[in-house]
Image (cartoon, rainbow over all chains, first blue to last red; front, side, top):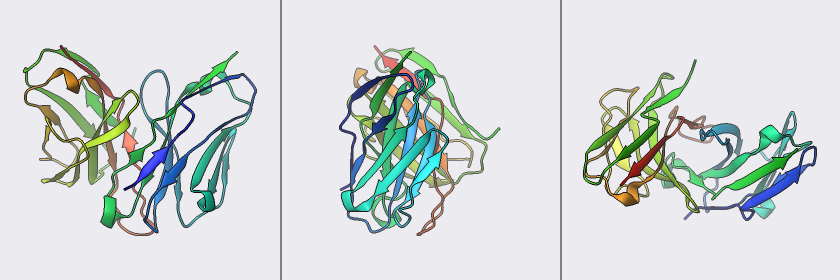
Length: 117
Length: 117
């Protein structure tokens, strides 16, 4: 069985602070894919990033960065210099090998991030 | 613009009254899927389809039906809705590639908020 845990239910920060959202996953698959999605107050789900299990390179995109560590089964997401527009629910998701899980995404429960002015 | 559309966006109905939520994508994606989002449970897959006329159950299929008669459309049917189907529903689509270099990131529609009284 696959599982994604986002232990932080809610995080509140003041604008310009850095914030890290934690994601820990469980899978027995050798090949798997990790994702982060953003759900702003308007409700849609916005794709942020995809990471393959065989590529442990960390990634930076503007104020966003992702730290993938297979040794600890973690795929953490950091927002640098947070802004009010970053306020949203953030979901971490996992897709395993096709043979075991097809294209099903297993989602964590989400982290509500509130950035206060 | 590449997108997944859902209709209606909001629906209030009564127990037992059949309803259909439509989903359409313009990206020529083979794979389409339905999820429901409930507080504290994250997103859970209802049904998915790997191509026209090919559908299969996800994690929570009870009370739902789907069909895939055309590649671009994947409607979700509730034959006899019940209050426990009150939820936020998302349709998603992706390319369907199998293997180590799979490129099947799922892109989500805007969501349909359903209330069953």
